[in-house]
Length: 276
Image (cartoon, rainbow, N blue to C red; front, side, top):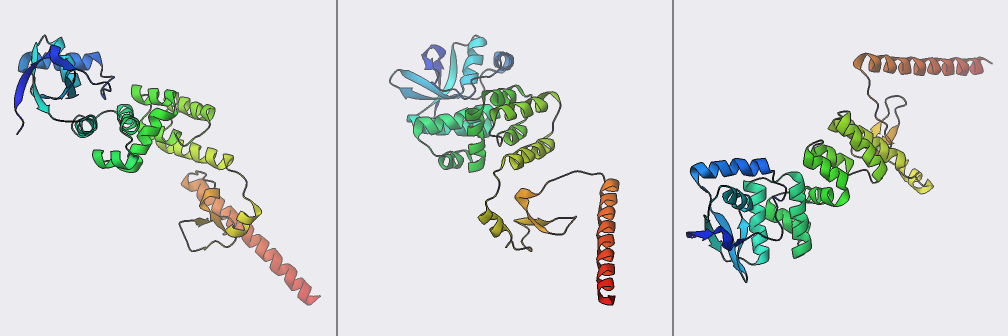
């Protein structure tokens, strides 16, 4: 087991990249008050460098200890290279003291750019899925306004994830404002984004139309049956409309009646042709 030793705060250096870079002063003040009463309960993890000791995990505790007036803090010194230190930080910050979504994105991006780690490498280290890592990296890379909105809490990460599917910056900003000021839910955003993607999709080529005509009508993964005409339609081309149960029932009845009327009219014409 690693030995705990007290190290002067003046001998500790902050790392170049700090995951909890945007911790609020009020939160640090709250921890400082706790330290005044109970001391630093959990030791900082540090590593020896050419210039002294670098904090690997415990930057927030370091700031709070300074604010509380401490001269030294309990530390565990570990022999770590730069990459190993970042992996340890990842476990500390993602699993034990969870980062918010924006800080996670910056942490993942730093590991990718600094240590040439792939999304798969980061996912294995953090215990997250590759999709989770990719989405968080996209969040901090894609759009500063979107990143800021998630950081300040005016939209959720789930809402941001939907908005990231919109490649047009002006359209993405328009939907972002609706989310922030008009309370658009994730479900509403999903519908809006799908409508945008459908409207901006290129027209299918004749070859594609020919291929679509050979759809397997029994495969629910690529097609659905139209409630009006009964034809099989590709999922990507389906238009989703919402009705209350009463209106939905009335519309289906109207369609059914019209189909019956047309069918009766056709039979009547055929009968007349036979008699003629």
